[in-house]
Length: 192
Image (cartoon, rainbow, N blue to C red):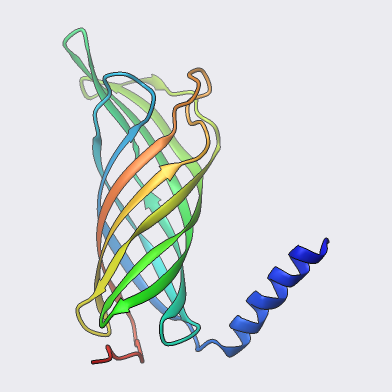
């Protein structure tokens, strides 16, 4: 392990020791997903759901890891037929959560996705499989608003960093999402 890695691990451990107990929650919402660099494809509407945690490290900074089922892929019209690539993932984002106003925070960080579905439908009939890579890396950014200490809403954008389809170069995931969720037993209160 080089010195930079040791320093990063030491800083993260120091933050973790000072952190409060994580607050756990659930969330779900809508996705609009497509692949970049494939001409003419449209956004595929889908959904996501899963678990989230919030680990407060200071009054303005927290870490928010999640584990989510996420429906992704794309939609296309080819020769009058609707083609849907259902490329779904188990996504694991780890986001920095920075409070910028009472109840409002900005979030950003890396995400790893593990492919768990790769179906190709033509006019709602399963018509084979899409050849995709098993792992996807993305960068995620967005905002979160806490309506009270338990209920929240999120809007996010995820941009893939790795190729998705093995037979088509330079295509990457792009996902817009809107979520609503609930933190259980959140001891934090929104400050005035």
